[in-house]
Image 1: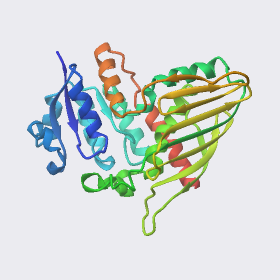
Image 2 (image 1 turned 60 degrees about the vertical axis):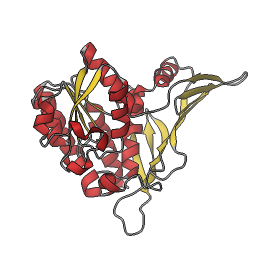
Image 3 (image 1 turned 90 degrees about the vertical axis):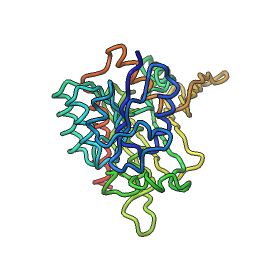
Image 4 (image 1 turned 120 degrees about the vertical axis):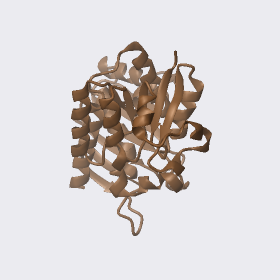
Amino acid sequence: MPLDVALLGCSHPHVPDLLGVVAAEPSLRLAAAWDADPSAVPMAIDGAAVPRAETAVRRADVVVVCAPTDQRPAPCLEAARAGRPLLTEPPVARTAAEARVVGREVQRTRTPAVATLFLRELPALGRLAGLLRERVLGRVASVSATFAHPGATDDAFDGPAAWMRDQDRAGVGGFGDRALHLLDLLGVLSGGEPPRLAAVTLDRPAGSRGDIGGAGVGTWMGTPLSVRAGWAARPGGLELLVAGSAGTATLRGGTLELARDGGEPERWIGAPPHPGEALRAFAARVAARRLPADGLLGAVRAQERLEAALLVG
């Protein structure tokens, strides 16, 4: 039997990607969709719309939370208290302090919960982790990471998604939205400890409190780190460059390249980042009963490091 999915919140830009996975996977079925603003429910799924979040939760086996950040804690807790495994967009709440409260309460219910940190699902990530573990690169000398898209210049945040440009509602701007994924990715590679950013410079449009991107510097496992992230880069995408004394590894999109002195670079080609892969992996882990008990911890830690850097900057 397929897993019945409840979608709580329909105005996040990743919703079409997630719905595409539900439509493509025989193991998934959309049972209900809810949004505090009924007009935000896409016409393609309005037949599944329900007026109350709790109704959607009751109809589902699992819950996907894509509500705006200021509304996100309530549906997360609704699903957790009902015992429905949940997948939520990060950040979990507007501030790290609020996110910690949500994470503790979800953990108290013993309901499995994970964040949509889809860079974790890159096939090439395991290969890169192996290169670092086996010290193929030698002593790591520097790391640079970029994750960006042109959403702010392509009007991707007009209409129902306009809340993402409102700092009071979204909690983070363009830099935080993308950098949180990078900090989590580097945390996965270091065994759970996200990097620390010492300083951040934000690109703030005239007359706006929010930002559309920025750059930061810090350290990762004692190594100098530079980060660029935001919503105003074309073509954008993911690039992680790890330079070491014996070689350099570059993860670009879904492709990992290893360059060493002498000989041609070695290259592994994999699928590029896609938000839908987080849902596909989540569903597989639910079916296998292999979801972590502290699945929101990585998102909370990354948000803590991000907030600390922004306060300094």
